[in-house]
Length: 92
Image: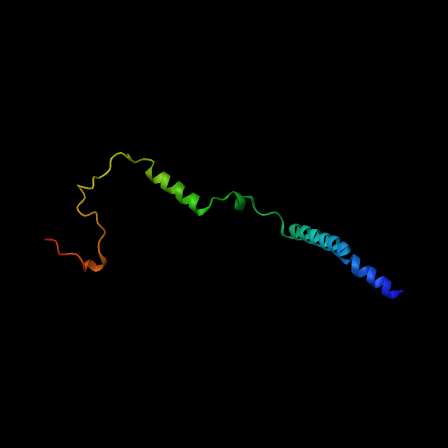
């Protein structure tokens, strides 16, 4: 008789285990949310670093006239400087 009972329990274990685990997890998450409280509203609405950087750049160029650009011909040196000026002849 015991062997038949254990065989039935073994075959039906997934049907019993999943709902029990689901309920335990649900209750545990609700208890944790109750103990920790709601997250602060500012944390969710805070801008990312890339958004803050874009806003700062837009504020910097807001007052400038972007049509006035120095010509490459007018620049004295537009090529990047070599490391320690080793590969470039001295200018007089």
